[in-house]
Length: 120
Image 1 (tube, helix red, strand yellow):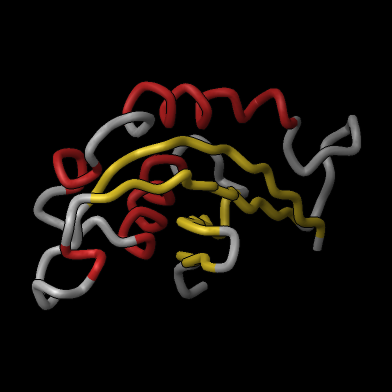
Image 2: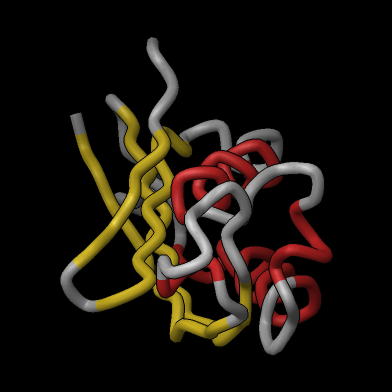
């Protein structure tokens, strides 16, 4: 099995619902997000790729147009704007375009990440 990944980044605000008032994430705050998409294939293309990284330009375009410098609560409602929910949302957006996609990872900080990978 061959696997590749590519990182994208954006900045956005959000506020998590359902937390105690004294929880820091219950207040509006922002992150410099990193999104990593993971693709895999048992076979390589005739050029030796799982997928040409240039083919992934729609991911950057989507992130720039829909997520960057936005309030994720406005975009993701009624879902809570957690990294876990964002990873799944992005997976569902990009899976039809990229059949090799098997997981999406979202990091809000350098020390944390959430991964959505559906059961096979």
